[in-house]
Structures are given as C-alpha cells and as structure tokens.
Amino acid sequence: MPEGGLTFPVSGRLAGDVRADSGDVALQAALPGGPLTLTAKGTNLSAAVPAITFDVAAQGLDVDALWPALPESPPVAPPATPRAGAVEPVAPAETPVDLSALQAVNAQGQVRVAELTLRGIAARDVGAKLALANGRAELSDVRANLFEGRLTGQASADAATQRVSVTGRWAGVAVQPMLTRLANVDGLSGRGDVHAALATTGKTVEAMRRGLDGELTLALRDGAVKGVNVAQSLRDFRALIGRGEAATQATDREHRTDFSELRATLAVKEGVGTLTDLYVAAPLVRITEGTPATVDLVNERLDVMLDARVVNTSTGQDGKTLEALRGVTVPILVSGPWQSPEYTVQWNRVAARTLSQTLEREAGRQIERLLGGRDREETAPEAPSQSEEAARGAGKLLGNALKGLFNP
Image (cartoon, rainbow, N blue to C red; front, side, top):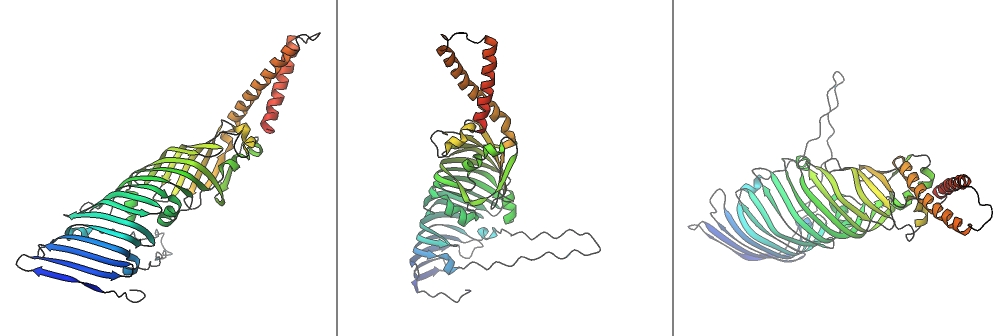
C-alpha cells in the first residue's frame, strides 16, 4: 500500500473436495472498523467459469484503507505541432471501461455492511444482492443511508454489450453535500427526493457519458439556489426597464434564491438533458422553464431560460419595489459552465408588455377615481363639458400611469 501495510487477524476454515470439484470457506476477520464474516461455496472449480455463492457481513468496512485509490496520473501534453505542417493536436486519450471480468465467474450472494466508507463517502446500513452469470451482473435490493437520505434501487452491467443501467430512488436526501461530493457542484441546497432511471453503452467513460439516456426527477423543499438572487435582480427593474436592456451578471456565491418548493424533470438523450416541469416557489416569484432548457452532461454546461413571475408583492419582503412587475413574466437566461454560469435578465423582452400592463392597471384605477369624483360633483354648478372632461381624464390617466410605472 502507498503508506505501508495493514495488518489484521483472520480465522476460519477452508475445505475442498477434489472429486466433487467443489470447496467452501468460512472466515472471520477483525478489521479496524469492526468484525467481518465471509462464507462462500464454489462448484465446478476446475471449469473455465466456476460458480460461487457467498454471504458477506461487516460491522465497519473502510474500503479506502483496504484498497486506496490509485494516484491520478498527470495529464500528458499533446506533442507539439511541427512547424512545417498544420497538424491538428492529438486529443487526450479516453478512460477505458472494461467489463470483461464479469465473464470470468458465475456468482450469487449478498453483502451487508453496517458502516461503509468508500472514496470518502460514509454510508450506513448498506446492503445488496448480486446475481452474476454469463457476463451479466444484476444488483438488486440495493439500499443505503447516506447524505442524510435513504437510497434504494437496482443496477445491471453486461460485458457483451458494454451496457450499464441504474434505477433508484433517493428519499429525504440532502442535495448540497451529495452534489458537492459526487459532482463537485455547490449550487443547490434543500432536502427531498431524487428518482433516476438511466442507461448507457460505451467502451470508455467519455463514450458512456455521450451515450447516456434516461430521466431524472427532483422534488425538494426548504432550500436555495446559490449564485443569484432573483428577487434582488428584479428590483433593478426601474433602472433598466426604461432602456430596454438585458442585464448580465456572473455567479456570486454570496447571492441565493431561497425556495419553499422546487420540482423538475430532466429527460436525457445521448448525454444532453432537456429540463421540463420546472416549478420553483420563492417568496416573491414563481419560476418555470422556458426555451432553451438544455443541460449538457457531456460538456458540463447549462443553457436554460427561467421564466420568473412576480407574485405576493403586498406581503413579500421588499415586495412593494416589485409592484410594477406584479403578474409579469421576466425571462432569465442561465448559461455557461456548471461551476460558474452567467445570469442574464432579459429586460428587453419585458419592457413593452410591462408598460402595457402597468398602464392598464393605472388606467383602471384612475377611471374608478374619475367616476367616483363625478358622482360627488353632480350638484356642482357649471360642470365642464364632456370634451373637456375627457381631455382632463386622459391627461390625468397617462400622467398617473407613468408616475406609477417609474415611481411605484
């Protein structure tokens, strides 16, 4: 091992029957994390593909200590382009995926681990059943408690077709530590359920990412989207709406949009996901998906239009500053790499309809005021003519509407 060895006591029995071409083993090991027991029986041991049944139970199993991860090799720079020719740079080699080991044995059994550590991820109450035959492995009854949630599901791998599939449900999971550890993404928090049904085929990791198909669904509560404060961005309305400009801002980890509910579905085809059924309930806004709605899993990029509709301006925090936008849908384009996307509030697509809706609301209010005032002034002498009244009313309507637009 990289930092020396690992010593632990093992006891048990090993038996073999040459005439029956079989054998069995029963071992007990005292690992640093607790005891481990292994029982296994093999038949057709002299055949090209022996058959094995097994049962493994462990109190604490630290795979990182038993089999440390190999150090990553430094990237190899492509050879320099000769000066005499315009030769394209050599693309970096892809990481191979070799499933041929599945063809070496037929096996059936189960594993149970009370506390498991694997590549820095801690899990409890881990279990799974394995059925391996003819180069195809089936994992069933997969279960584990990790990232504060409960994972259940199944998986399969086929050496002949290089096809891998996963189906699972993660209930009550805390998504921030999960995404940070598994995908190195720290842009979403909250707790809820994640459903996945994914499959892919390929001979390299990169090819499998390009061939990924399936669906992911997400339902979270009481969390936040980090990097942008949608309500704060919309509060810039009065400064930007008159110019009709789009406003772009980079991700700022100090900003966040809190939500009480977030739902979304990602339909994946050949490594590219399309976001559907998005719904985010935030204190002042409701957010749904627009067009485009692309999540590129191969190149780790986003190109998603978020349609933010302002609601509850009378009760939300600082809601009065968004009164002129109440009921208006504001498109916000999120684009760029996962780690640092940009957010563009497209005010140029909002100005005309916002002005129209604001004028309509103000006109309605002013008409009600005028009608009420006329009733009170019916007994006044020398009432103005109808043309004079209309002119005054129109001027007052427009003036108050514009005042309400730019000075809510």
